[in-house]
Image (cartoon, rainbow, N blue to C red; front, side):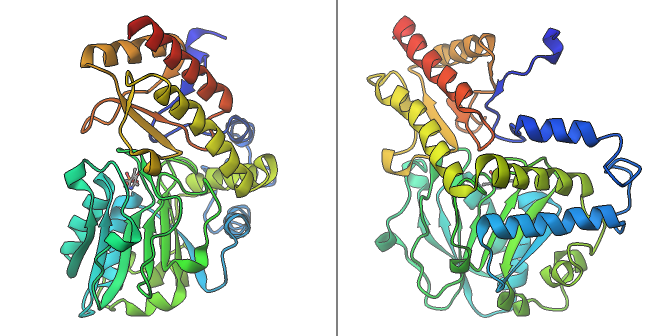
Amino acid sequence: MSTAEKRVYNFSAGPAVLPMSVLQKAQEHLLCLPGAGASILEISHRSKPFIEILDHAIANLTKLLNVPDTHKIVFLQGGSRLQFSMIPMNFLKGSNQTADYILTGAWGKKAYAEAKKEGETNVAWNGGDEGFNRLPKDEELQLSSNSAYTYFTSNETIEGVQFSGEPNVGDSPLICDTSSDFLHRPLPIANYGMVYACAQKNAGPAGVTVAIIREDLLDRASDTLPGYCDYRQHVNNGSMYNTPPTFSIYLMNLVFEWLLNDVGGLEKMHSANKEKAAILYNAIDASHGFYAGHAHPSSRSLMNVTFRLPNDELQDKFVAEAAKNDLSSLKGHRSVGGIRASIYNAMPIEGVTLLGQFMTEFCQANA
Ligand SMILES: *Cc1c(COP(=O)(O)O)cnc(C)c1O
């Protein structure tokens, strides 16, 4: 293999690592999708082969997450960012109710800013003063009495804080941005009004966002919404209101098949994720403060491990030496700095073990 062809361990926060077997299958099928006589990139979204892929994607996701028939699955575009607006447009606008937002990091803050444009909002909890390094306890939440819904971000990708369960919000429909930890564990979908995720962190390539919506909430939307922004259009047209992102859906379905058949389901995925994250957090904890973890230990993310070194110089050295060891994309988000190792579902344990060893050796050499 030439250097240009060599694959490294890719700790990018997103778009991010995909399972090798998924890439191989896509490569195998790229010139000719079996039975289609052309590639997935060239066939109509109304063709039988694509409709089969879409049906399989919905069936596979339903199986993985045990999605009850009270909830509808739709594939959307515009990334998670468009959901920041579509959620309040559909479920808040014109309702005389208040939408509650639990702010545990940068993405939740952005979603809240969009919701404010559509109706009454309330910050139920804000971790900003503490640098978004922990999650709230249920008794800290200040929900409104006429709550339209309660919104939270299960995993804050930039800060590396993650809910390990659901906040208790009473009767308020729970809406969750699971963009960076979708399918990392089983999720009790019945407890949610809506769950959504862009694919490019933990479930596929950029270009598709999956939403799982409780059907009764759909009635809240006004007919004056722009067509694309009305969830009912996507539900009623089976994700074919406009041309869907066919390749992204195809590839995401291959990831669903990988989770079902190769990993063996989300319980197993969750165990593997806990095992991987423990390797890095142990390296942090064993470093006697050389590595300072950003998240409070009780709020640590299994997906994005964030920490700092004693100074910027050492941080740059860490990133550069790691890259020489085929450990790539470890620089933290430009807004917070430090180091961020994103260890999504598809990151093999070998890559995490190598990074853990590198951390230990780097600490010994530089502390
Ligand atoms: C990446 C990310 C987003 C933004 O996704 P886009 O597809 O770029 O709009 C939103 N929320 C979370 C938690 C993310 O990690």
